[in-house]
Image (tube, rainbow, N blue to C red; front, side, top):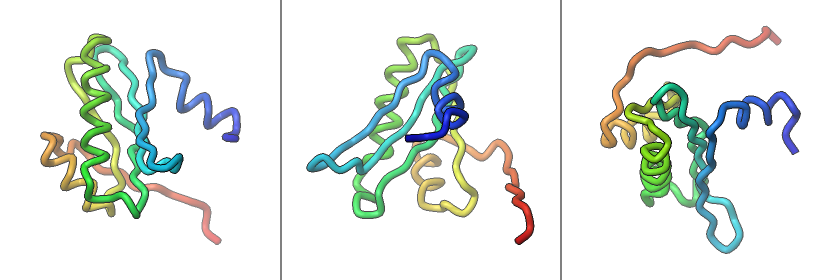
Length: 109
């Protein structure tokens, strides 16, 4: 179970929906979508290592995009780690372009 703050972050914006793909009851791909002010926000797109390069993330994004159209979205954005070049290639093929980059900071050990 996720902490309350994490659940709020994932579900606090409405409408929100989750897409997932399971194989033999194993979750192999998931993604979260929400619509705010006409924007589909795609967050938490993940594919299990054993299921990568099979089009699952593309299918999840496509399903969420169709859902978002029904909820008034006309644009979309997503967030991807700058070191995840495989995912960046997928999203580039889907028409996404880098808008900006950011860095994460953590306390020193």
